[in-house]
Structure formats: C-alpha cells, structure tokens
Amino acid sequence: MELRDYLRILHKSWVLIVACTLVGVGAAAAYSILVSPKYDATTKLYVSVRSSNATSVDLAQGTTFARQAVISYVDIASSARVLDQVIDELSLATSAKELSATIEATSPAETSLIEITTTAESPQQAADIANSVGKNLQTVVVDELEKPEGDDESPVKIATIQPALAPSAPASPNLPLNLALGMLVGLAIGLGVAVLRSVLDTRLHSSHDIALVTEKPILGGISFDPQTKKRPLVVHADPRNPHSEAFRSLRTNLQFMNVENGPRSYVVTSSVPSEGKSTTVANLAIALAETGARVALVDGDLRMPTVAENMGLEGAVGLTDVLIGRAELDEVLQKWGRGQLFVLPSGQVPPNPSELLGSKAMSRLLDELLNQFDYVLVDAPPLLLVTDAALISKITGGAILVAASGSTKRNELAAAVRALEHIGSRLLGIVITMLPTKGPDSYGYGQYSYGVNHQDDPEVAAVRENVEAAAKRSGSVDAALRRRSGAKEPAKWPV
Figure 1 (cartoon, rainbow, N blue to C red):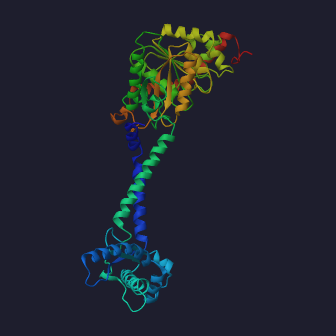
Figure 2 (figure 1 turned 45 degrees about the vertical axis):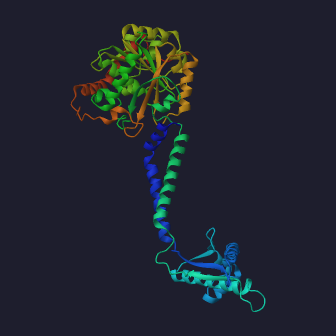
C-alpha cells in the first residue's frame, strides 16, 4: 500500500480511530480511578569494612570487598530470614513470600550502597517497612552472617545514610502516564482495525479500487441520491440538481469516447443486479437528447424490464414484438418528452431472451435504429447472471459497465470485464454509481447545490402528462396489433 492509501484510510475511518482512542483514554482513566493507590518509600544503606590504622592499600581492599559483598546483601534483603523479623516487628498480616513481592533491593553500579524500596497501600506503612527491612538487614548480616567466632567485631559495617520517609503522593496509579498509554493503545487499535477493515473489504468505493481491477477509463461518477426511487429521471425532473450535472458529465465523456466516428450504439450493463444501470441509462438518454441529438433508448432487459416503468410509458408491446415480426419498429417506438428521445420498451417477457437478443433480427433492428438515430442505448441484464448483455455487446459499438460504490465487489467487476474481453467485446469504460456525497470516496458534484425549485417546471408537467397518457396508448397500440394479426385475443408466443 502506498502513502495515499493510508491517508485515504485515515480520512475514511477517522471516526473509528478517534472513537478507539477515546475508549483507550476512558479505560485508562477508569483504571486509574478504580485501582487502589500504592505508595513507595526508599531507604539507603552504606556498606563498609571496619579498619583501624589502615593504610591506603587496606582501604582500597576494603572498598573492593564491600562492593563485592553488596551484591549478596541485596538478595538477603528480601529473604525470609530478614522479612520474618520485619513481620514480627510490625505485626503484619502477611507472609514473607507475599511481603517480598513488595520489596525491591538494588545497588547502583560501582558503589557500596543498597537502596531498599517498599510498596504499600499506606504511605506510613511503606516507610515503616522500608526502615524495618534496612534495620533487620543490618542485624542479620553484621551480627549473624558476617560475625566471626568469639567476641570479635564483625568486619562488615552497614549504616543507614537515608531513612525512609512517608511519601506525600502515591507512586501508582500514575494518571498522566496511564492516560498517555491509554491514548497510544487506543490509537494503535483504531489504526489496526481501520487498516484491517480496508484490506478485508473487497467492495468498490472509489476510482482507486476500480483502477486495481481494470485500466479502462471511468466515464462518470454518480453520487447516491435517496430520492432515486421517487424520481428516477432526475435529469428531467430536476435538471439543475447536482446529480443531473453528473449525468451530463457522463454524456460529455461518452461523446469524447467516439472521436473515431464509430457506431454510436452502446449497451449499458452491470456485473450484478441493483447497481443502478437502468436509472443510469435512462438519465443518460435524456441528457443526450438535451443536446438536440436523436436518441433511441431500448429496453434490452427481457427478464426484468424497468425502462418503461421508469419513463412512465406502456411496456406491453415493444422489442420482443419487433424481433418475432409481430410489429414494425415505427409502431412500437414511443416518443418521450419534448426532445428527440424515443423509447423502445421490452414488450412481453419471452421464454427465450438470449436467443432473441443474439438473433439476426436483433442485429438488423440495431442497424435500422442507427440509421434513424444519432445514439442508440440498450439497457441489458447483469453480465454475471445471464449472457444477454454479452450477446448485445457484440453487435453494438461497445459496452458501458455500471458499478455501485459500496456494493459491487472487485472480483465481480473483474469477472464482468473478463466476460466482455473473452468474447472480444469493446468495453468503453466504467460508471460508478451510489458514491457517497462526503468523505474520500465522494464525487465532485456532490458539493454543489443550486437551490432551484422546479415544482412548476413545464418539463416536469410533461412527465406527468406522459404517465397519464400511458394507459390510453397501451390500449390503442395493443388494439392495432390485434387488428394487424386478425386475432381477437392478444397474441401468444409461438411454440
């Protein structure tokens, strides 16, 4: 991962990181409040060798002996022989083993000093235990272990040079240190979780994720619109909405993709369902028609057609009727809006969608549409579920793949790209839908707002008129087909 990847993770997961850091600080604060305070007290002893009329050589030898002996005396300080006497002297309700865990005896390097530090819940008790250990250490070493036989004095002398005093503040818990450690631990956990979540998350979130899958260009990014179900045709219903501007940007990029003047027929598909392909193709068709171009929108999803419903048109007759020769193209094309946009609904759902879409009749139909229109857009089913979109892409100018941010997985997009490349279809680019409006994965137009009320827009009124007239057109078109075929009942699929 590069530096920008980590910065993106920080930008995206900063709330999680901050939350973990605060939890760490809170846990450290709670621990510092709930734990019983401990007090430390320290006494210092000096070890020397007795000498009278000693020469400088004798003094040097005595000093060397004392420094060597101190190492053993440090261990003796926490031994049961010393601590049993401390317990009896102070009447402590503990054992020598338990008491030794609260005592630490050390000796600074190259010195004859012994430092005895004790820890207790009471400051005075800590001082008393430290002084008692020092006094009893002197007794055990001088009067018992190092005392020669007879009445001679012990050659070793241990003197207290700094008695232990009752501390004024507890040694633990150290609130500032605990808070700092809690903050560092919480921050480390937050960063670890954020990085781990990013590594394990295989969903597409931004153009960077798509670049890991394919080198094909990103034609556009459509931010998430919670009003999509209520107004799927946002380019028409609210033309100055930032989402409408995103579809116009997609339109511009698509126009530049065809600089070689190839066939301007495109199939719009996705890898899996619910990625917004039908909404995208409908709004793209409207945006293209805004430029004055003649646009044909074909509902090639013969399994779950939605174009007619989104456009407010009757979809009982359409593409399937033309493909089986039950109707002529001019009879089922429906003009939409005030521009030059014409919609060819799917018609009745056939039992053999793949055969119809891959037939020569479909190829002839697309050629006929290209002769009449500047752009032909075909809405097709997802690539990974059925072969319909792949079949259509072979007889069009190229495929546009729609991927939903936060939903589509990288392996799904990769499989869809491979499916098109395997049959030699031309993948024009990727359109990212449902992008968040804030954060590192947001898209540019999400930050702009025009604040225009389009409630009385005449174009919106035309949409309403379209929907109201759909039922009337349904009856007239279906009746015309029955008259043409001489049938009294609606025609059925041939066996």
